[in-house]
Image (tube, rainbow, N blue to C red; front, side):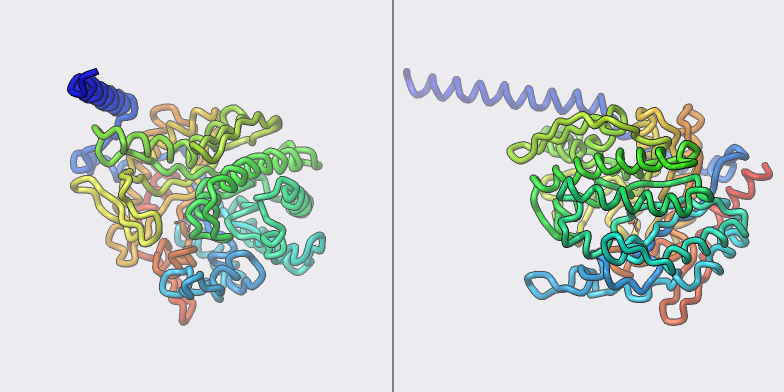
Length: 474
Ligand code: BGC
């Protein structure tokens, strides 16, 4: 055939493909709108928001981030050991060290959260490495410590919510291959049974895993959390095993005396993904793939029990997991990401923003519409929702009040739409060790002076305090 004709046919086919791709991007843009509310117009409404009287108000922390003194968990080693180039894995070479000394100061912290903030629930995680320093050996002093934490909560009218796994676990568990190996699930199930036997009679609210998405993607996809691997294949397996472990942990609690009364849930982080250019099929494609791995894999599991993870050329998991999936869904919401294939894949991340959006100290903006979207999406799971984390890194405290007012407004708006939200835990009670970002990010309602360990309530916390008070006494 005449080369000119062949050229014309190929060019014609390419044009058709391009038109089809643009058409697909257009239909995706219609199907998945990116709402942007007029915050100036909404301004007068923000201080009028009132929540139902039985809505639960809390703050949240995690053991490794606040307790201090951890030496034998996956994070303590990660902070100490430099990477292949001899550089610390933590921003500024920070170490968690004595953190906020919450191990020693929990009683004053719990008293203050009631007196200053008015909250009635506290979400904290148990330090597995302290409770079970070697496989099967439980440390009575560590178990007694959390009895005392629960006592302090009770003394101040605060309902505890316990997280069983919040990113950190014992070194021995890490060295056994942690969640890469299906047989290791038994260890966390045994830990769950042990602590439920101990505290179950006094604690009703339990979270199994904090954020299987970030925990696995950062640890096995991007390699910026321990164990620092970059393997899509292992990543897929870890997500699958976390889902399986969740089912077994819920079943274990339910089978124990009093377990029927426990409320158990998985904490899902929804990272709202939108394409940077809404007309661009490449941006949409990447957005869909990332959303599938990070969000949809866990959401589908929560909705149906089916774990389906497809990473082209690497992972093809499709498995139905039978068993209980929990009584509530926890939502951690922080960020939306405007996806563009050129975005950096390693810290320091540098994110896009839309005109007029305010950046936080983390590489994302204040986008409360994203929390509203995430609540609607999570409501498809069909379980009551607790917002188990939401808050801003704001060292200068000049955006915290805006964040709180907007995100509480978005929460109430979703509730008015019919989404069953039962409570809101602000992240975090005080500044704490922000994982790979070390001490650089300050999320606390209380500023922490690390030299003196003094806690100072930030002015930006006021709308949180006011909304709680207004909702109790409208
Ligand atoms: C984690 C917290 C973390 C927070 C702020 C959440 O993903 O559960 O441990 O400090 O985000 O980045």
